[in-house]
Image (cartoon, rainbow, N blue to C red; front, side):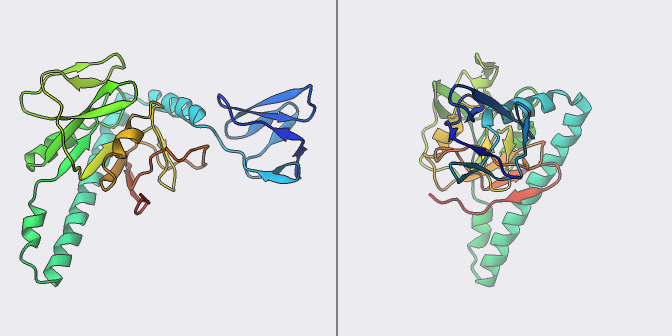
Length: 267
């Protein structure tokens, strides 16, 4: 059965306004199903406004709220186990990438392949907080391999800047509860090889939902060739959501159970 409505407004603050009577707008909160007065709207069905199909999507605001609630329900032991699985899957990903490069250059009989594999790569990695995927073990591992690790610091409302992770680095929580460097200067750099990025959710197309500040959306635009890797305790979100052209996409996402490969990103 298809339902028909006369007018639909733009999505705003997590709600749609579906109007069957101009004097009686119905607010619709979208979760797994959409409940509208006595009418149940199913995300799997088609709905029409003035004979035009309307795609109903869950909003990012609601997904953020749902995922934070899910995360907060887990016990400490869960995070210890899942963090180890994610670290192992991330390590396997880099091993496979090395093997691909090694095989390519060996087939070409190019002696330079070993130089490439041993070169210093530049990683920008978030500093994890609370119940996020723990990045400190990843940072330690990369630094032991002599790679350069950059970490973020908020410069203003919507901008992140790069700082070098060093042995004598001192960190302090900012007003958002995020650790930031306090005894080093901004590290200006033209190229970054990998971004390892926090998130609350992602889908099977590589779309990412962060915390809503747009910090990483803005930063990655400055380094369009960098590979973007998300870390997530959860698997891909089953539904899609309302997004815009400014939202950042991922190349990969590492979870406890698998490595998602979303391919190249159009720049």
